Amino acid sequence: MRRLSFFLLLAIALSSCTATRLPGHRFSGAIQREVANSAVFGKAFTGFVLMDPASGKVLADVNGDHYFTPASNTKILTLYTCLRVLGDSMPGMIWSRDERSVTLAPVGDPTFLHPLFQAWQPVMADLLHVPQDQAIIVDTGNYNILPLGPGWAWDDADSDYSAERTGFPMYGNTKRLFAAGPGSLDIEPGYWKQYLQRSDRVSGDTTLLVRQSGDNTVVYTSGAPVDTAFEAWLPVRESAAYLRLLLEDTLHRKLTWGTVRDSFGMVRYSCPVDTVYRRMMHQSDNFIAEQLLLVASGVRTGFSQLNQDAVIRWMLDSVWNDLPQRPRWVDGSGLSRYNLVSPRDLSVVLKRLWDEQPHERLFSLFPAGGVSGTIAGLYPGKNGKPYVFAKTGSMSGVYCLSGFLRTERGKILIFSFMNNNFTGSNKPLKAEIQRILEFIRDNN
Image 1 (cartoon, rainbow, N blue to C red):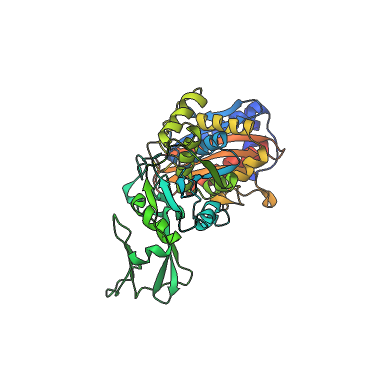
Image 2 (image 1 turned 90 degrees about the vertical axis):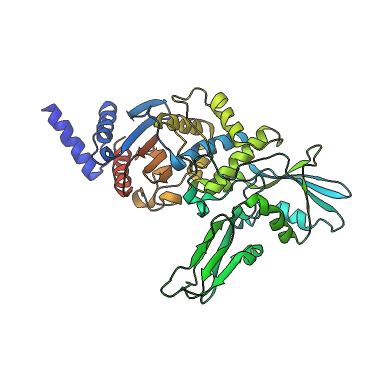
């Protein structure tokens, strides 16, 4: 009879999402069973961990020690690394000057000339004020970076979320196409206009854009309809080869490039780091994530070397050498399927974030359910008040959500949902995760 009463209480709580609170052991057991026995999760490979950060106690664990492809949950690792290494402002450039020249050493700053960070361009402002009789020298001797990360999908190469990595990014390593009139397009920065080609429409062809594989040529059909609100961002291919031309076109002057630095100058800073972190976490910006790891690696070495692999090894060998399962971590963004991490690992990293950072800062950096970022339309709270602050991770066959949950009583819990190896839409998984999270919110 007692067993029947318990399941009746659980069924009512799950269906009505009331604020009835279950005793601790019953709550943990109920959550464990709901995840393990879910018909929706049964169509995927699902891992789940629920932790109380105040005590470190794991309240529920389903496949928590198994490895999963995290997709953009990888950005939680990148965020922790940057919060540990960087200060409150983004390093923008190493700058030294004498009476004859100005020497720049790039540090990987993703905000340089980035259209989303126009309010913070002190380095560019300084460059524009260098007299014409002083040479500008760009020293690129501290980096040698492969433009695409290990395991990145080749068919993502022409998508804006797969912008190339480099020690000296400009304009987000992308170019913006936009409507310039009926049947006409324009492009920014202006340098790329020479690569924008207009062609006559082929009969029956409504294709607007044709991107040439392997270069920066963009062909558009003049007869295709162009909405006045049309906008598209395209990655710059072989960006390193175009850096000199692009910066010289922007500054309207010739530059000297090479390895010339004998000693470092002073660090010029660009913008508040939280502004950059929010872009990475809320919009899941892969380019920002990749560049942030490069900047962090530079800070670690006094900017003598920009090397993602080195800072990843340091984090795994020194900072996270006691994680439950050693992650396989290969890039900053999570674009690579080579990344492997367990829900237990992510829960421990999230707990350390909770222990080490101001809590309101974390809530501002993570997307808020029903309010901001990639979960603005998901996991809404009551009366518009968010209760989920979490990072998504999505790619074909992958949907993950990890972060913080605020219960009705104001208690904070850490959770990590990781779903791999499913086909079709991830909408059923999102709905099932929401059902579980609402039960946790209302019953703990």
